[in-house]
View 1: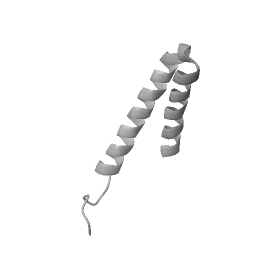
View 2: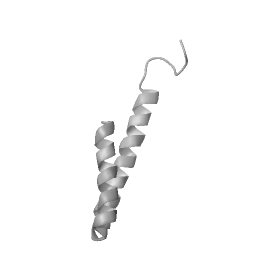
View 3: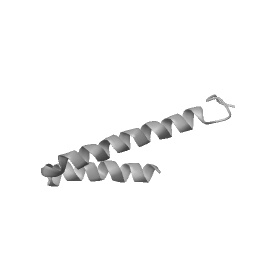
Length: 55
């Protein structure tokens, strides 16, 4: 899942650099990557059974 996020952000950066006319698509990919990062963070921190302490 992290690799998918990496590819989304890498593709967005490449589009802005090489094809500036596709800026709208790049922004959409960037927003999707940011939402995916937020979802994975919330899933990892609030979806666990044990609290985030050292055992």
